[in-house]
Length: 334
Image 1 (cartoon, rainbow, N blue to C red):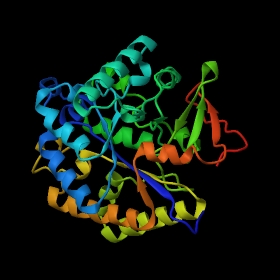
Image 2: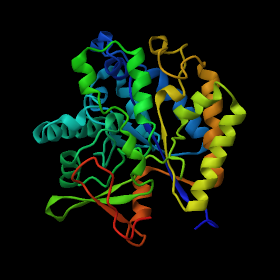
Image 3: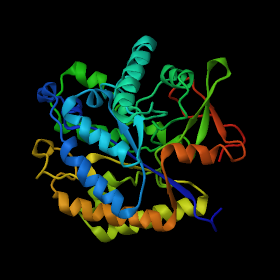
């Protein structure tokens, strides 16, 4: 395994301006402000220059709004994969009832199919939110994979930072109590596995990859945060994380966000977000170098292509989807 180029799936959660404001407790979200028309050309030009095809997880409500149609359609027209990122992008999706989950999935599927011409088959929960009811609904609806888990211990620290800068009521804090996960998430698998569900169904999970062993994130938002203090430290950290992925046979699933390529010159309302003191041109230049580094050491894939390659492997690990406790993997787990 370590002598070959491992696959590396690359995805981008297409969180919009209004969704960040909503999670942050800013009532201006209700006007549904958008930066997707400005963002789409930036990311498409970058990916085209690098020859990369990735998966965009799209929010259903955005796909239903006229001002976003050209931007979202341009992603699909360029050959990128479109996944389901829920309809309302509420990181408390795990609190939804089963009927509400079904409605959330169906509305997003219909919106994406109208815009992109294809029903989504990959799902990621907003804020890494998931539940057994959600996984069962995905399996019933013939999704190929879920990608909602982030197996790190750093979630509560990120949540504390977010709460400190937000204006939230006690009820809103309760809604967001599981935002970014819990300490125990570090015990979750860092490699793909199958959820075992009621009725004998299974669903592939491809976690957002973290640094093997350390269990700290290395997706680009965290790299940007490090770069503000030292780009040399950032590059050492990234190269170390990728080296340990190769050494352990971990096929990385790399996560991006719009704010990885947008600065305060484009979206000044999000200055509270980490890394939003960096201009768009600096972010894009750094993102280009990071993606080039990944492509030089791994074989870049979309999420569905990664899932297809995993289907050809020997049995993966399995976890019963019964709670958010630490997983109990089968002996075949990686």
